Amino acid sequence: MNAPASLPNTSAFEMDRAHVLHPWANFGPFEKAGSLVIARGQGAKLWDEQGREYFDAVGGMWCTNIGLGRREMADAIAEQAERLAFANHFVDMTNDPAARLAAKLAELAPGDLNRVHFTTGGSTAVDTAVRVVSYYHHARGNPDKTDIVARENSYHGSTYLTQSVGKRNGDRIEEFRYKTEGIHHLSCPNPYRRPDHMTEAQFCDDLIAEFEALIARVGADKIGGFIAEPIQASGGIIVPPQGYLRRMWEVCKRHDILFIADEVVTAFGRVGHWFAAEDAFGVQPDMITCAKGLTSGYLPLGALILSDRIWAAMADGGHRWFTTGLTYSGHPVSCACALKNIEILEREGLLGNADRVGAYFNTRLKALENLPLVGNVRGQGLMLCVENVANKTTKALLPDEVNESKRISDMAESLGLLVRPIGHLNVMSPPLIITEAEVDFVVDTLEAAIRRVTDDLVREGHR
Ligand code: PMP
Image 1 (cartoon, rainbow, N blue to C red):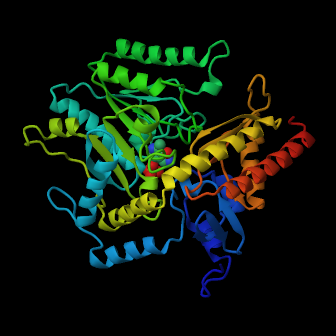
Image 2 (image 1 turned 60 degrees about the vertical axis):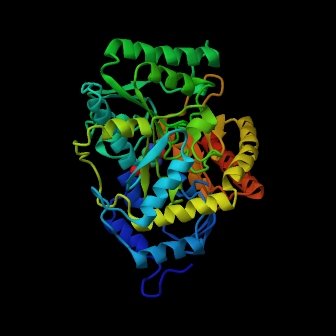
Image 3 (image 1 turned 45 degrees about the vertical axis):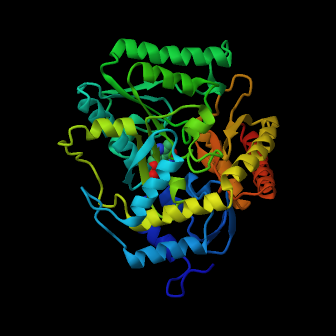
């Protein structure tokens, strides 16, 4: 679609380059090349300002679960904006969409996770979860039980606290001096990168032992919470070894450590379930954080869902203030948007589609392991990636400056496909409406892009 008539075609591009400070950007290349200006979206397709079409296999940012451009979403948002665009949600005020969404999330969430705190996105949900860890243990007479355990290669958000809790390999951190006190990182449960001499089962035993050893060293009276993405997302689609999450949860239960499942990516059908922790991994978390697929990206919203047990401890005595919250907590328009989104996910059976088409996608993508550049293909449901390597036997990576994943993504973009480069990976998380024919297009186009970039790397002497 063309840009509005009052603006020249290049204006968004120019204004962006002149005035926008982009998130997660590398400013050198940005200043040279500028940004791709997206003008319109429908389903899983995007069009740029010049009218070029792309299949968005990234799903926006792991979030456009029901697909873009739905009239009934626009109507639900418009109706609520007209009826009540904003309402204070602090202390003892609420609104109908927020209350109904809380009840719906309590119905969908596992076990006794019946209490919902609304935030503006994933980071603010995780940030609040970390505070609840302290608040809960303090309320139960354990004020020092505040340390948080996370894993290498996890991503839990981009506030100062949540980025301190997460720890992705390769992220530049020296400029920011993240908080380290009271935060511990265990090994990443990546079966592909496990030590050569270990079976997957031994690797899993080792990871559990590492957690137990940390608790013995630091003290169970100090460690208040453990946070884990059921499948690590931007750390590289890490599907943990069989039994790992359940065993980590059992360790948590033994030591009164709250288990936070960060389901910002994995919830709302991404891997075929409302929430992955229980349905895919047999874990009943104490808290779940979610965002993204909660509104399918139509509006910003996050939620922290916590258990009756935590609520009971927090409410006990009734005299303490819970001094955290955001202006837009329980935003009525975002909550109305989420309710309509959940209704569509249910009505169209999109969780089942993610499961069925996801299995087809995983099978088809796996065949790319035959390519000389591809060391590993992995995923579950509609979270998938290919990992590029210099040597398939040693699994050694190409030097960072070769930037092969970015080059593959750029090549795919020129062929009408968006995939996301992260480190040495190309990552995909398409809308749940994706069909098998579209999977064929994605896999064939990605394969063509990898082959072309491989030829270039050979010519340049990198292979
Ligand atoms: N947790 C996880 C697992 C995520 O992947 C993300 C975002 N990609 C976040 C938290 C942060 O969410 P947001 O960007 O909405 O703040």
